[in-house]
Image (cartoon, rainbow, N blue to C red):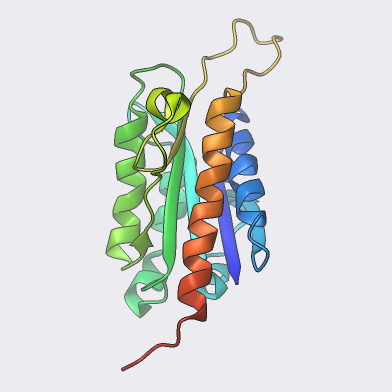
Length: 185
């Protein structure tokens, strides 16, 4: 079973979150996880995926230009129905608490809905970390912009990273269950 974790990261923050999601997906023993920047993905590669998790940074609550460009390249797959029935998940980052990350996650789900994908929510036990950092639409992190160009890169909190790992695992588990289920007509 193959799971693709795809990211469009402008400054490295989203890539760090993608790595946590991929780490979580790898916890499923049957998962062959592919982690790539959308700049390095040929859309035809997605035909072989059982699960696809994509994410990017928020630009006023919308996908960044890099992700928007990638999503525009998926028209041929849409026309051929190549992603129908595949399992999907989304993730995103914003630089402030009200940076539009929830709107971003819903915007990233919309192409999945057009492709007929099955979207997995990011739910779980309502512990303190999930209440504070969790989002049912997908994995999310609020990462402030660095104070100076030469400052070390800010990273998601450990709680955000753990929720991302749990989400990656959950999407991979659902993809694995569906991959093992024989199709009936």
